[in-house]
Length: 394
Image: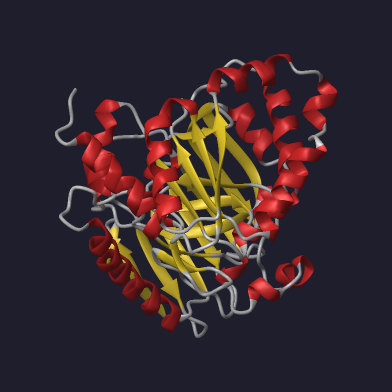
């Protein structure tokens, strides 16, 4: 397949990532996480970053083959211990407020067949050792964005959903940001006590903490610079009260996690904790996920996405959370973003927990929305206000 004007569109994509995604500022370092197969896009991003005034651009190349060999054959001690130089690098990235760009293009089932205990061991050790970057990202201390790359047959869909096919993609993103902001502003004004989700496979009530904050497309870092954390995005999201989640929820799209595909997940919650979890495929991987730490058994994010969103209507399952989460309402197991509550970025972990904000070293989105899902907002006085009907804004 040949995409008309492919190089021109790829150039616009790189420019959008740099100027809108992380909004690189003069003398700011940039770190780019990208697969070796996406060298052309990587070089364009590097060029745009320096043109925007970046002080340096660090590329963290990934390679699926090499990663699989490491997870299969590295000795146990190395899986359990992350070298000091990687920890120091993470500290450098966090301390210097580097703009973080992540481009996802790996095979979603790349680690299928590997010993899931080895994969889990490494992920836990890596998450703990590089915690400083995770915390800086979750607090929006630095700008960050997640983009996507693909084989030829998916590039056109990526260009479409990231608005590269429009005459002025940057202006189109600003307009889209404003649209999502109006939804977030309404939800922030309502300050619902809880959300009640119902569909043929879901009946769950999710509490919301007092003074919670709904975010749209754009976010602001500690310096007050706007950035777009996800491109594309169709969501507004906030943190749930991790102490008050009750009911059951079924997934509506497969999840790619730890290099494996997990299908048809079903979670049961009581008093904010998962009490039972099943999956038609990948259940052992899912069970390892919720064992990551205590916070992995609860939720850290609830996101609202209308079923008529462009990605949903494409009919494509990307097996990539970045894209699939913008086709469906979704929730996330694990950590909440501290900025989802007023003053949260200045709170210590224990104080966040006292407000119902979930703490974990993992954050994994799963899709649970559908065209037959209804969502109600429940006010403090018990008043029920429709938010979604039949998968769209009410």
